Length: 257
Image (cartoon, rainbow, N blue to C red):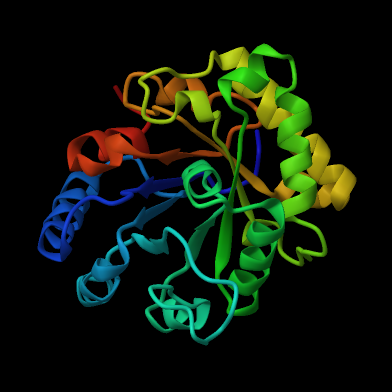
């Protein structure tokens, strides 16, 4: 059995205003109270406008929920209208920042080089990157899934040091499964998450790779989370739509249907 601490993170994307965010986390805390979620990390990644409100809520109620952000800029400050810098997030006690989500890569043109710069910025301010990698349906059908994912890993982690393996999280998210209701078969999820860990051992070393947590993402819900979490190289989930329901997200955290 792995000693890696399971991590379940909810990516809310562009949903919920700050009042709705407060209500959602309050309800989530209620549902998690007494649930079997000790010994793992629970993270919520709301839109930027809700971070301060949730920081206050989490601190005042001493909730066992970590705050995450969905993105950041690679520079610490500057003339980048509409962007948010890593040190700004760190001041709000953000612990995790998503980098390289497929929507950022596809819709905003983020390359591995851009993602790499963001990962370094996140680390430099004491936060933990959740680095997303994954293949499209066309790439999978062409038999290139492992090749694509390992290339993304190498490019996004170039020059990135990992002193503490748990300071880096890698989320394998097959692009064709995000928001579609389709989920990778357990054997496919294990194959790619295993390939991620093998590549991490090549980039770093076997011990470091054994300690880095690998999440699965892509239509994770209460009905499939237990099967996914039972896979040897899956240490958690990056949850999209289901994280917008406090009941469903709590069931996912507890690995229950």
